[in-house]
Picture 1 (cartoon, helix red, strand yellow):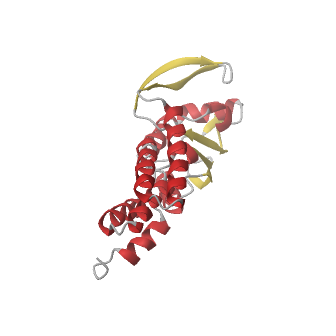
Picture 2 (cartoon, helix red, strand yellow; picture 1 turned 90 degrees about the vertical axis):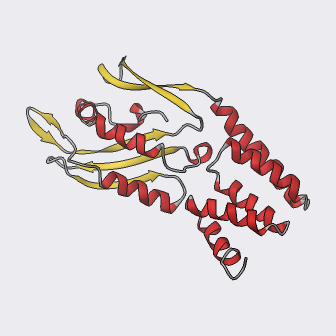
Amino acid sequence: MDGPTLSNSYSADSAGQEFYERNQLKIEQIRDSLENFPIDRCHHGLITLHLAVDTSGTLTNAEILNGSSVPKIDSLIKVLVQNLHGNWIPATEKNIPKPFNGLLSYKLINAKETRRTKRETTTLWNGYVRSIEMTKKLDVSKNCEDNDFFYEAGLTEFNNNNFKRAIYNFKNAHEANPFDLDVIFNIAISYLKMDDRKNACKFFLTGAGYGDSAAEKKYKSFCSEDQK
């Protein structure tokens, strides 16, 4: 996952630059935590947070402007930001702390990747800031294209009552984008159509674990002990 998109994250002034530089550790801590959330990177991979920090460094407000589309996950992200250890470090002007009211944007990448950090100059800030360079082991664009291609193929087969072939396509879509909740749900429904309750429940449970309320309802309806 890339670091914050600087041009979109802060107003291009010295206070915004200073706040970013002073709070690099917290900003990267958020980024590292977001990497572990089961978020559909192909369709909801841009997470934008609005933060308000007072002159004492206390976070007074945190809102998600662009989230994962899954309420449970967005709630967890908000709790994460609100419970970061320690205060933020305000920017100063003539040694007087200034409040911060701005955005952090994170772009999640749908690929296994390694990261290395480097220092680079940017004209936006007229100075040095930390940048994250991604070395991708997988073709990110192709992963998302495969996700969409196989999902549509799966829907076609499902609508033609070819549930075995639908599962084949949906599973290919799932492999390309493991956190696409629609794909996971449709795999489960396809198994249910084939009277394979065991595998249906497996995928309903997976979707429920990722915060899909529809999958959770199906799991409770079809997979309780008295229904098995």
